[in-house]
Length: 293
Image (cartoon, rainbow, N blue to C red; front, side):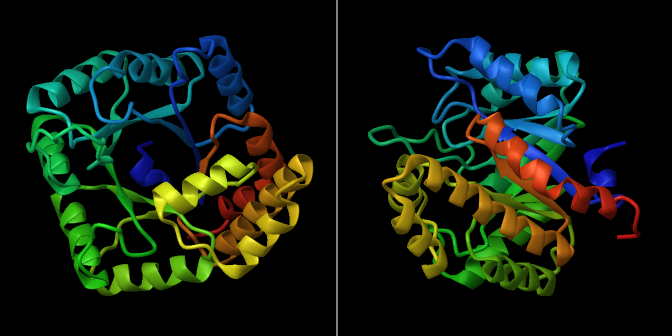
């Protein structure tokens, strides 16, 4: 069953992992993936190193392990901003050789001091190219709040519609901490004729560094409920971890109750946190598979 078909059967639950740094033993991620396997996610996506082709090998190897050793559908990220057509074709070939046929097509983040190649300026261009040159299922990214580079909310939704028209089979959202923001976005997408499944991207924030990245890099709006919680427990590592897990669980319970198509958990390669969240929400996803969506 393809991932696109799976959304018609159940509320999808999936993970994101990333290749470890060169200084981190590969065995650490392997142990994480084996722990995640016990949860039986519907798929696991693997990021590609920011800005370049240098991390092809790590991403392909991890996708290979997920797909062929763990028996879980693997999805490889493809950020197009710094890739040529040959780069993309080469990556698709390497993935296909390992029986990986699902990708997440992204524009990708800009790298300071490095000029983009200019071949794939937007994700819809990359999506079109992949669809024209392969039989891969292609996912796309979406933003419950207006993307920081978009000229307006209307333009942002139009760009998303272009991405879907180019062939994106389903969408995964950037992280958010206010579910109402996601619901408002979902309604706007529907009004714009975007009718593919939309997974909600959830990140359990469990340490100070994540908070700093969210505010300074990702530019994700933070609701008062979230900031108050983070400030209250900022100096207590264990309490902050547990508060972040509890907040993510609360989001997921509400999302599943409101009929979300799926939840994509940004694990930060932490299987302990993922397991805690799954233990608290597994029955919700299992119940969704027994009802007509």
